[in-house]
Image (cartoon, rainbow, N blue to C red; front, side, top):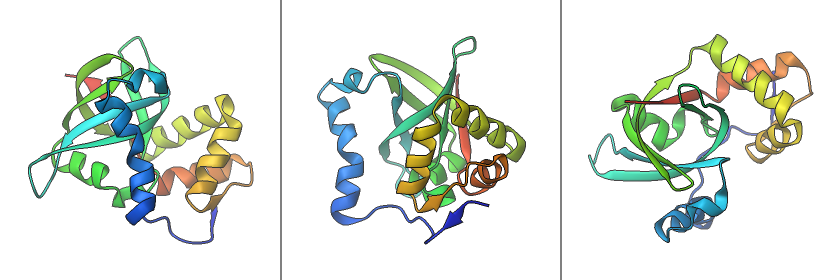
Length: 159
């Protein structure tokens, strides 16, 4: 199990502003500067019904389908995650490419496999990501599988 010094909570105040800064790059038509490791998600607020946005790190792309996989770093408490559970239709932008997508929550086994794959491709990135969110991985497969229990994985597939 990944050790947690505290349960990760979505950012507030100045920290929320800092986490949301990449959205302004996309609004200024500079999202391509973030490369293919990030996407801009545009979705519908579950309560307001208004358009909402978040920039998320892509953990894997299956270019044959094409499907983009992201993890909810703040777990099931993330607004974007909760909004997609209510309405899975969204749009994403990766670089300059826009796509209408359907969001699908991966089951536990699929999420674990995505974390194992991501860890093998980006071992430092997953440790840093987990650390920023208050988790410490011990490097074992079991800790990665446990991380998938607290960080759900979503697949964005074209609709």
